Length: 180
Image (cartoon, rainbow, N blue to C red; front, side, top):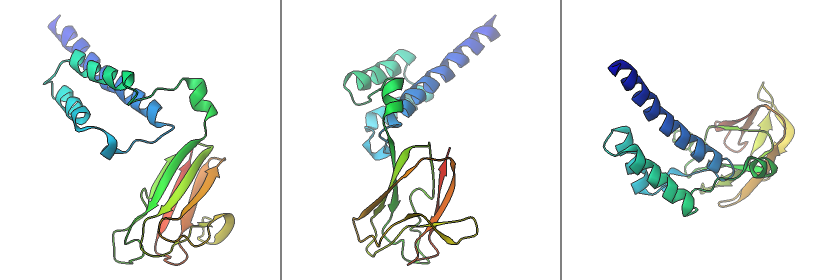
């Protein structure tokens, strides 16, 4: 009997974080979450709940507060489907340096169809975005003009697939967009 009770508690403990993750995933499907924007007390509550230091009720009350305060906004399924989703790729400062760590952020962006992707040049030099086929040849699919610091380039991916791109000014910088 104790083994069954222990298994029920374990199932409940794993179900709550799954529900919270699902809520966060739905709420971030339209406006992607940035870990820097999540208040420390939320991160701490999640950690403490995971470590068993606060109760399930305390943790759920924290999530409830976020929803009621409209910090986490949960759209209905119809609203989510009707909106064009958006994602962003950052060209970080130092990306031009062949020996630097300035890869695209993220290096492989995974998105759903009908997602508008915006590349943002945060580097101190111009870059461009050139789509490539599987052999590395530039193709006329999504290609940007030179992007100066702060410039943006947008493209909406309507079909599933893996899309390769690179910067022709700095050809060692390559990236992927995976559309599911």
